[in-house]
Image (cartoon, rainbow, N blue to C red):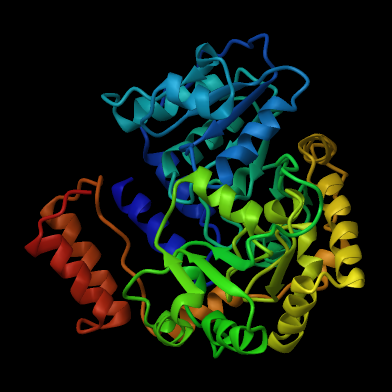
Length: 458
């Protein structure tokens, strides 16, 4: 189980074209010490939402919360990673009494049996699992063995990566056109249906850009790292040259991110960079900016449509992946088109503003939590398959994450924290990795350092 969890993490960060390993889950389930039968009793609630973890920041937990709050009857919640019912209930807007959390001192077999017994007491289980949550995947498989009629829906949060449990799902609920385009690689073409991402930020002001006189962009630092010659800092440098009145405020860059250095030096006082700011300050910057620029070459997920749906103006370049929202129709196909859009938005061009308003209304309607929940309900029908809007499909590029991984030229070794590997297991892991990638490769050396010199416990 420990090695399987490590492998899940390994495939999570190495986009090598492996998206599911059903055989591994079946082998592990066969090895687990489980009783011949489970004492299952149906409860009054029909639906169980299962999550590895929930967070106060980011877009994944709000997705789960929206599906819960839009349900006709409140579902129960099962958490599979350490947390408290009070914290999980607060994040998901659920009564803590409806939330079950794991007993940390239970051995893995007992934990899997406990979860499987609980899952089998419902009509349907909706999974929000991290790619390396192998224990939860085994519990779902055991529950399906006990109760074949149990409906299992897999919400594909990690649309670009390997995921445990995806092979046991009756339906895979796709949230992006990127994940939709990977159905063949996941072997889920007949089981995938599109639901989209629920987004419901309130309008903070009338439609149109703020009066701050600056363009604003913010996101995780790696999403701005140049890829195959595509670089946002280079384009922003040209934007400053063409529009002498605009200033830039940028959240996310790390001081070691060399791709930002030329813009820092040449932009002078017209460029302000911040590593991170509190949520309230972020929203103020968003509300006051002339227009919001999405991260590039990797998009920011929900940040782009949220900026538009809050009443702001947005601009972006078609990057390495897309299809995360209806707002993607506003992405420019080239840097030149993007610069033209930015100039028009700053000048309040009538045609540009009308297009933004039109897409904003479509975005609000498509991503309304009630609409997403309705598509999920329809998708539970075995014969129903919902396709993404054609506008989202037309812009999809596949498989950008795999191309980026191949360009990287080496495998990435994930963290070994919170895993327990004895010396023999460490040796096996290092030997297998070195055999495939070479003993002197960076990833092999790092793995050996972590396993032996630092004596990491996983």
